[in-house]
Length: 387
Image (cartoon, rainbow, N blue to C red; front, top):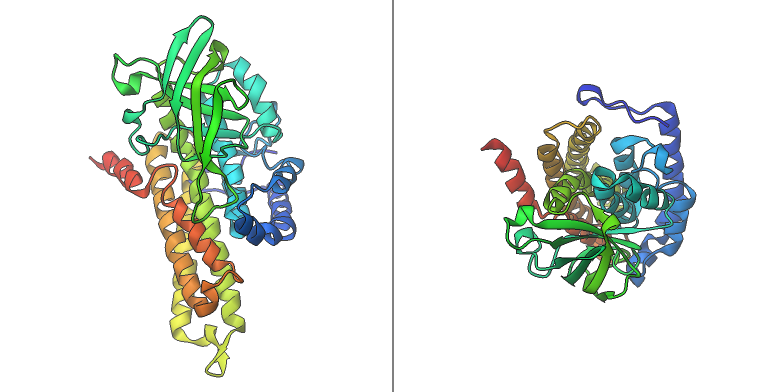
């Protein structure tokens, strides 16, 4: 396959890509959607969905063909995350997290590291996690305490991370640690690919969350964990640059997830409003409901346009990507929250019970405003470009 056409901010899919997207849609309808409520109820990682994605090359979407990926580009990846998240946000996270955790290697890894890990990740045989946040260093990486000490042949890591997606199910943890305390923090952080089975590494606990319950979030702990030199990502001291360049691109996956949640909630509310009778007619003929649905659809469409514009910029390595990815994540996640609240309102009492999916969508939407940089941080990123 080839990448989508994204010339001068425009975007389109060729027929082969449309066919692939249709396969994803059918898979979501037939396999993912029927599992969504159960995944949310049990809070268990959906291993069956992981296998399904692996069998259909879904994990290959972020990767180049030479590493076993589809080579279809950023827009196609966003479309896939959006489609999956319409039905099950926890399953959408699985693909977004694979993109996030592989990006540091794809952008800065050595040829050896790429050859060893990327084909395994593209095939879904290895899942990744991005371990940047800490208990006292979420939005402020300058407060990072996890340390890396240079030893013969590698590094020894000590510390703890928090709020890490794929905790306990990941095979590789892309870990950021302070490697030089004598320089400015942005120059003293190094990125490492840490094996999940490394001696001294463990997951201390998993969070009990409001939403995205099928995506495990936990606290990795490092106690004298040895990482060989060949598993350093980029040069020592470049970790902050690695993290920021990664987030400029990976935010698009969260924006795509938010757009998917918003569209899924809008579609469900619109279909419900066709069938629900009040005052002798379907409620979608009542102007109060019509206005809600119109705004939900309009705001979701606007978020999608901003997301696709940012995706096209990512494919062209546009220097303005950081600003647009922040705007896309900010706007799409705020829209997802607003739209899902309105979807609950359209369904009334039924919207508040678990028999219907919109209350789950509302809980899932909230996280998109928080992770991979809170929306307050996204506003700071955008504002700095205007200074």
